[in-house]
Amino acid sequence: MGTVMMIDHPLVKHKISLLRDENTGTRDFRILVEEIAMLMGYEALRDLPTEEVTVKSPICESKQPVIAGKKLAVVPILRAGLGMVNGILALVPSAKVGHIGLYRDEVTHEPHEYYCKLPENIGERLVILPDPMLATGGSAIQAVDFIKAKGCKSIKFMCIIAAPEGLEKLKTAHPDIDIYVGSLDEHLNKNAYIVPGLGDAGDRIFGTR
Ligand code: PRP
Ligand code: URA
Image (cartoon, rainbow, N blue to C red):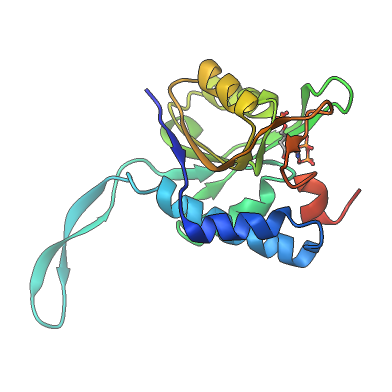
């Protein structure tokens, strides 16, 4: 069974409040998304297994822990998930990076896939799937469906802001994955935007409209 973890840290809360502010410009928005991804990644990777190896310090040899277990892949959901990648890579610099391109149809809100490139042996890796926004849940569900179809069994989905509707849908569709949420917001509006949310994450990261 997977878990849902709300990241309950004052630094994350503070930075998400700054992100929401409509006066936060592209440069600061990007920096904040990266910082939040790093702080959330620190929590999300808390259960990485370790193994003991021998380390020789200037004083003596001793057994010390290093990260063990599955190799990692970071697979952002394009576009907005790209903004979180460097924050996660700051913690695990040797992780491989894949990409899944999905966009939401503006009328139906259904996700459409337009690009996918994944690292080799993706089925044997722990996959971190970042996307700042979990709204209806359609994009996240489709991305997880896709990664699972490639054989992945260990998946951690990370979002900065989630709507209750999307979180429930994702948990129901994929009860086995771990989900990390920076803020659980109130609801979706009639355009399937998160309220209060932060607007369109992709547009705010890349300065588009
Ligand atoms: C946004 C966001 C998620 C998706 C969430 O991407 O980054 O991928 O919407 O909505 P959902 O939960 O209802 O599927 P968008 O489709 O706007 O594409 P973009 O990242 O290229 O801007
Ligand atoms: N995608 C976004 O970027 N923002 C939302 O509020 C919903 C979907």
